[in-house]
Structures are given as structure tokens and as C-alpha cells.
Amino acid sequence: MGPESEGSLLNRGTASDRPGLFSSLAYPDYRRLWVATLCGQSAAWALLVLRGALVYRLTDSNAWVGLVTMAALLPGLVVTPVAGFLADRFDRRKLLALTFGLNTAHNLLLALLALSGGITEWQLLGLAVLNGSIRAAEMPMGQALLPNLVPPGRLLNAVALNQLMQQGSRMVGPLLVLPVVTLADPEPAFIVGAVLYAVGWSQVLRIGTVSRGVIEPAQGVMLNLVAGVRYIYTHPLLLSVMVLTVLHCALTMAFESVFPFFSRAQLGMETGKELFEGPTYLMIGVGAGSIVGNLALARIEGQKMRGRLFLWLGLLSGLSPIALGFASNIPQAVMAAAAIGATTAAFMTISHTIVQAAAPDALRGRVMSANTWHVQGTMAGFNGINGVLMDLPWMTAPILLSGTGLLFVALVLGSLLATQLRLVYARGIPATQGPVAVS
Image (tube, rainbow, N blue to C red):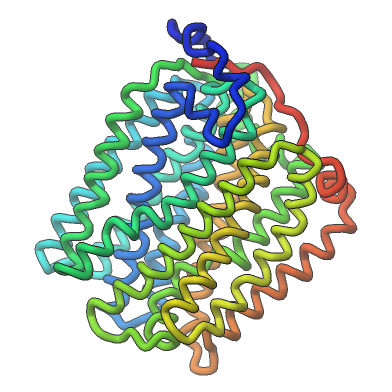
């Protein structure tokens, strides 16, 4: 529970009562966090595409693509709980600035190695682990800080805009590197990530709101570390939402490692540059759809309607990968990818809103780190699994994408039997827990 910074009362004004799609951006510190996270996420998605395509060109192996993608996500299993503890122990804005500075240095190092022409798959793997470790710390710190930057009445809008930006950055990052890849060579495109993180770092350094959680000294370090996981596991609503979200991430969102193979086998993009362009086009489609999905969701204020959408979006996010699996040209594939982006992003926005609303501010850093821990770990593991599956002689993109999508549809229908989820579908999202300071 962080005290308000000096300018908080001046920043309140009438902005909290101002309706509109982008009303949360009226709060200066929230706007700075939003821009910073946009830059960081855009750099991350651009790097995910470039790194996967580069290792595929070096090894001609889907398993290596899955391994490197997994390496960028898997460190969250270890780092995220510690990051959540630190986010509730120290000033969240200072910790966030540290992670942005480290990721700026990482992206610069990777760009230099790529430009040297001598980078190996093992160096890519090691740097992916480093990048994943820093990002695993960055995400829960930003998520824990966010509710302190807007009044409680704007939390749903703030989370929706934050998710719009996070998911929409799948388009922004690849879109920024596409001209470099197309007009020059793939290697200079790695510089874009370093520039984006540097810009984001400058924004985080300007955030003035002081925000901390509450650590109970009597509980000891270990009990404080696992407090977020324990809260989720003993909270019936959060546990039900978490299980459904984990299944969603595993079956409908772990597709990055499939994109290089899909571009070659399904779209016929086989040359050096095309191996980079194909996944980039697909990721741009996902990002564009994410923007549309979250913009539409941010306009919906009714709690009950959002609850119903949680159900319908779950069903649609399971059906949309089927269209991508059977796409045979770039326009079809980009449109199908946009459908995936719209449905999965909106589903994840509602899921994150439920977690943010149900978490008390004193524990929010650790609860959000536990949420990230589950989501990132699942996507890491299943990206690795999908990479291995795509190397099987009989496996095709239509089989993989259709099979996982239909399985999730069945699971969503089965979730109607779970009392807590059925209440969300019928009544909507619960109210915010704990005080929120505004700057």
C-alpha cells in the first residue's frame, strides 16, 4: 500500500469521472507506465519473431525454435515468485526501472552479436534465458504498480487498456522490424528492440507514484514468497479462473514456435528473408486482432456483460486456430491470426481483470507474480512441446491447431459445471480489493 506522491491530488481532478475509451490515460503516471510497457512489450514480440526465425535458419529444426522460445519464457517459473516478493517489499517503480535498464543492455548485446554474423544457436539460447529472467521480474512489478496509478472506478478501463497495449504490441514490434527485414537484412532489425527498451526506460524513470505492498516479518521469507500462490490456491474464484486461463494459454496461445514451420510448409515461404517475413506477418495479424478485441472490450462497462463475454470468448478462442491451420496464403493466414489475436487477447484481459480485482493491494505483487508464473510457465512448456510435435513426420499445422483448439472448446463447455466460473459468467467480475493510491 504505497503513499501518494506529492502531485496525486492535483492529478485527480475530474479525470476519474471522465467517461471514454482512453480515460485512464488522463492520469500522468499511468500514461508513463502504459507507454513504457508498450515499448518493452513491442521489443519482446519483435525479438520473439526474429530470434525464432534466426535459430530456424541456423539449425533447420522446429525443436530448436521451440527450445529457444521456451527458454525465453521458462525462467518465470523461478524468477517470478521472487520478483513478486520484491515488488511487495520495495518501491515498485525503482525495481521496474532496473529491469528496463537491464533489458536495454541485453537487447543491445544481442543486436551486436547478430550484426557480427557469428552468433550461434547456443548463444541465442543463453541470451533467451537471460532475457526471460529479466522479463519475468519486469511483468509482475508493472502489474502490481498499475492499480495504484488510477482510482478504483477506472481499474477495469486501465487493465483493458494495458492488455490492449500488451497484446497489440504483437503488431507494433513486428511492424517496426518488418521494413528493416524486407529492405535490408534481418540482423539490423535486432537494433529496434534496444531502441524501444531505451525509450521505455526513460518513461519508467519519470513515474512519481510510490507503491509498496506489505511483507509480514513474522512469516519469514519463504512464507512471504509463496503468499501469492497460497492466496490464489485458497481463493475459490481465483483458482477456478487460473485453471481455465492456464488451459487457455496451453491450447490456444503457445503458437509462436509453430510460425516458422507454418510459414515454410503452409505458405511456401522458404528463402532466407521469407523465413523472417512469414512469422512477422503472422504476428502482426495477431497483434492487430488483439488491438481490435481489447478496444471493443474497453467500451463495455457492464460487469455482467463482461462475465458473459468471458464464456463466449473462451469458445471463440478455441475455434479461431482452426482457420489458421487451414490457411493456404498470406492474406488468409493474417486474417485467421487476427481472429486468434482478438479472441485470445480479450479473454486474457477479462482474466487479468478478475485477478487484479480480487487481489488485496498488500499482496498484489505476489498474486500477480503467481498469475504470471502460471501463464508464462504454461506458454513456455507448450511452445517447447509444439516445437517437438512439429518435427514428427505425420504432424501438420492443421492437425495441431485444430486439435488443440477443439480440446479447449470442450473444456470451456465443461467449465459450466464449475460453480465459481458459472457465477462469473452470470454475474460478472468482483469489486476491487484494498485501497488504491492515485498519482
